[in-house]
Length: 165
Image 1 (tube, rainbow, N blue to C red):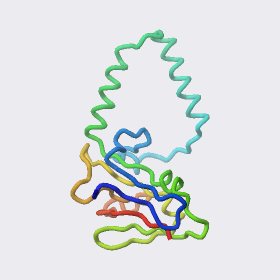
Image 2: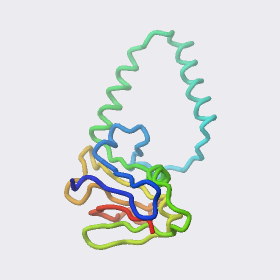
Image 3: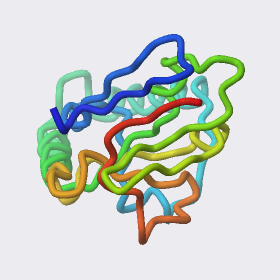
Image 4: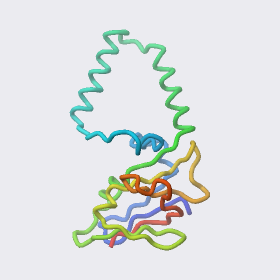
């Protein structure tokens, strides 16, 4: 069970994470470009409007039938998943655990000791779970990156769990 990580401590719900399943999650981030591209604000209404507009434009231009380009797009996505380097935002998992009001610190447990962060900074963490399409078996199951990429060259490795204090 070395691949399973928990979020525990001063939380309402203990959360169990299995990074091996995240490859199928649409929330995954492409870490080859994440730290280099300009950050965008996420406006869900704007995103929805753009998606509907794109779909509408495609139907007007190509008709309502599935054009052959959709098959190649799906193949490209599949190849990207099999060869990509991906991570997940830690924020939704931490929010779902519902930290207690008195909680101020997140402790990252590793094979080499513990690392403490202010809880506010922990919401920006990114958990890398895949490198070139392969799970992080040697020094994983995840690598922890700060949201700003400050430790991009030296991430926190050999993570066993997270404790909210």
